[in-house]
Length: 454
Image 1 (cartoon, rainbow, N blue to C red):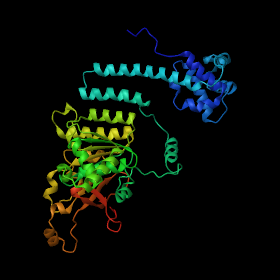
Image 2: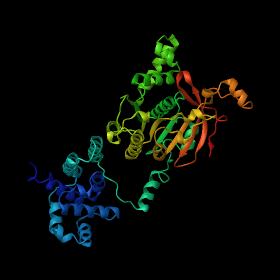
Image 3: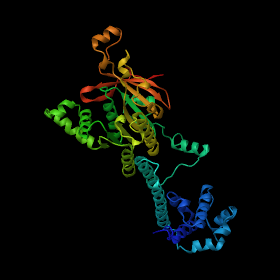
């Protein structure tokens, strides 16, 4: 139906952009912030724009003479039409005032052409019979997502350029390269905060408080003015809200559930609700969430509101592809790889809660190790950070502790956070205070807890 039609473009808008830049080279930085040479439909206009960018990169003046010289040096001056064409560009616009408007027109038609190209690639995916439906949907979604964000697959980058970007974003910008603050000082000192593009695994046996710690971290990040996406596959939205209220108000979850509050508690809950309402936390409690749906929701929030942290509770409840015929290990491996890819794609930290196998219960110490990660060794491989929660008072009564460790004080309410993998730094161990009745984790006093590096 559309085969006999030219792709959408506007020759006059392209020429007006170039004419505006030739009249006033100071307009180029503004236009170049969103308009690339590939956005031009006519090749000769693309070459002229590339010549302008080359001059700008060298801090050379941009005018008729310098553009002609640059095009001549590249061997393209005669192909674009020589000086008569450059004079035509200047004569086509009275001034450079509307350069940005012309640039937006060129950009819009470029997006339409890219949409047509993406549609063709999506159609090819649909016609291909070798992919499972979920994988086909993921590939189609990726095509539109790249178009939406205005970027494609990264090209090769020289080390010099990579170093320049790194130093500009960190050292030379005068800011630390730390990540998001988790709200726990010793953990932040060990990890440098929650780093962009990292996948962090928080694992423990049931009842250790892994969901509570993930929620505490989400709340702490949101209190810094950041946006958090919380995918709760285990708890309903109401339970998530109840836990957040308990943590914020200090009223126990049991009393919140009963609703039988004292006047003081009711005032604390109302105040806590007002504080929490100001936080930018988005909750999805779909019980059978697939990786494709989760990626789509996270990407949409990232585009519409911005996104700083993704929390998933918990990883083993996610649904993967049906291509593995019920092989849960391979399915979890696919989910783990996809989550790591999403963290990199959106350049945000992703915190995933994970279950541990029962092997922990068979050891005298009950302390978890990396091989205890349930259902897949690829979780350990894909993760940038793996942290375990271990609470001695969960396994030992005070009497048993005194018999086994007579010289050590009973660790009532103490949670050991064991960082067993840290791709970018040291491993270590630290302690937090855990208040079970309000599902709250807190820093211990500085003289009580220091990260022990391994």
